[in-house]
Length: 334
Image (cartoon, rainbow, N blue to C red; front, side, top):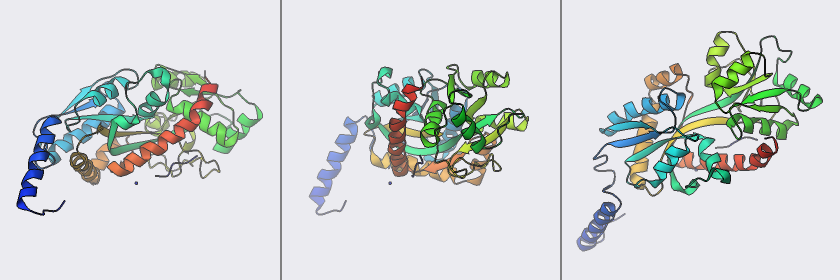
């Protein structure tokens, strides 16, 4: 399963009427008069996780440069809770005037909508995608002395002994949980999930203690373990190799069409003026095109992957379709 990542003046009277109507409409939407005077007040950037984590770090790196591009002020506000659901709820209830932006992560923004039990007060159409910043593929690691050396080794062992091999996840319906479902669907490899709702630290501790056979993790989170020689990475669940693990094969090149990644981007509330969305999207693209900024991201363990508003919108829908397909399988494995 792979993702493939889409007015003219007639008379002076009509022009004056159009201008008056536009100003009135903007005033009714909260004071945004379009891109010409934007931003005219501080922008709030909501982050659904605590300060210091990868999503927060990435958001703050962009915010710092975006202030310069827009000649404005951006205040990062951390709103942790319910896997970002608290932040998404606040975003989608704010005025669509271009002054509330949120860091968006997949699969959280998707799963909180697809899983009815979460009781989300928003749906996909309540977001206006702005730009994608990071795509962080899922990697599969084992202990250095593990008998498995390749994705093929792991798949074949899991086929021969269904459910015997255990792998970490960061919770039910987490990215790793979906990765296991995708692997089973594509290869028949039945690997049992062991859920650690407290997050990746708890999962890693259990793995390093020898309590779980396989560690599933974002590539960025694996870097310290790779550098210290505490893990052997079998493969990356993506079509192309990760620049952080250039010597590690992908599952795709190993013959398995499995591509599961977490990603991070930005969104406004739906209804935000298109010209404002485009201005911010373009500015983020220019920021990420700067080699110095790219180095800041890679030094922080973040894999820069830019998509503009239209591309991100399509990617969001494609990823939603993928996770919607896998959700029944995930529920079977709970």
